[in-house]
Amino acid sequence: MPKPAPPDSPEMNAPTPEDNHPRATFSRSDVPAPFVHPAEAEFAAFLDFYRIRWQYEPKSFPLRWRDGRVAEMLTPDFYLPEQDLYVELTTMKQALVTRKNRKIRRLRELYPSVSVMLVHRKAFHELLGRFGYGSVDITSLAPADIERILLSAAEVRNRVADLGAEISGDYANQSLVLVGLLKGITFFLADLAREITRPLVIEYLSVTGPDSSPEGVAIEKRLDTDIRGKHVLLVEDIVNTGLTMDFVLDHLRRQEPASLTVCALLDKAERRIVPVDVKYVGFSIPNEYVVGYGLDHRGLYRNLPFICVLKRHVYETDPSAVLHDLVSSNRVGRG
Ligand code: IMP
Ligand code: MG
Image: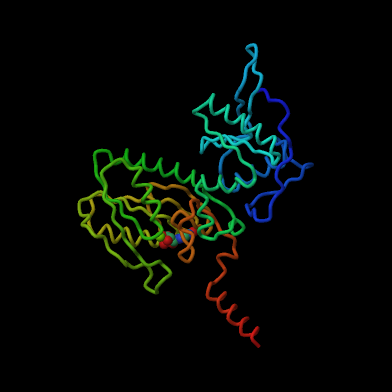
């Protein structure tokens, strides 16, 4: 693909202090290939962090022709395949912004099915919102507290759709009962159920965790309906040691369903103590504590759209200890 005339002015916005997105900073002299401008490299690092897939300048759009030859075209800096969105980074200089705006408008006229977005530094926030990362602000989770994003919102969405299709095929001509284990299952169950094209009933079960009492796992809330003779699909957020799952499967089996299978979004096989047969697995993940998309730490972070590992200090911060420190430092202060 021929490249258009030299890239527009390299004058990009300087980073602003309130702009706390995780990203690498590249100076003009160390811009890594294939990028021509530090802002492009930073944008790519930002996309990588959130596991948003990208391609750099994959396509040029002819915008104007003269004597049968292309006289003007636009090659957007990035294409995001999961969002089917082209992204053009802009400069601070008003004259160039105006020119680019005109080009983008022309592109939209000529190629109405193409989705393209003009982004300058400050608009990163708007872009985040589009991809569902706005909730990072709602939960007060600073990007600096995120160690690593394991699965992006798009990756989760695509995999859930695949699982739904697979389950729909396997249960052809049958109806089923989805049993979800509260509360981590909230979002996965809601999304999975809508991807299953069979008649289904949703039931919830609540258990206490394997470490929460000396007796181990126990039932907190039973099913509301009789599952005898029904096809039951137990839906779990994550299988770790397998203790919870083993207990729950035993509890359900006693109610004599026609069939009983398991679907787990995440599988930490490395941690398994009790073998459990998980027929449908969303993702196998390493032995790390994860939050987001229903999974919590101290009840928080369930509403993150992605699944991530938090920085160690977040897990280690005990709210009651923070309170204690505050109170005692106050006392010292009052002297
Ligand atoms: P298991 O009994 O050890 O298999 O633990 C399963 C339960 O522990 C799950 O239903 C989760 O509620 C919780 N759990 C295990 N690992 C994680 C994690 O990495 N993040 C959040 N919750 C987890
Ligand atoms: Mg759970």
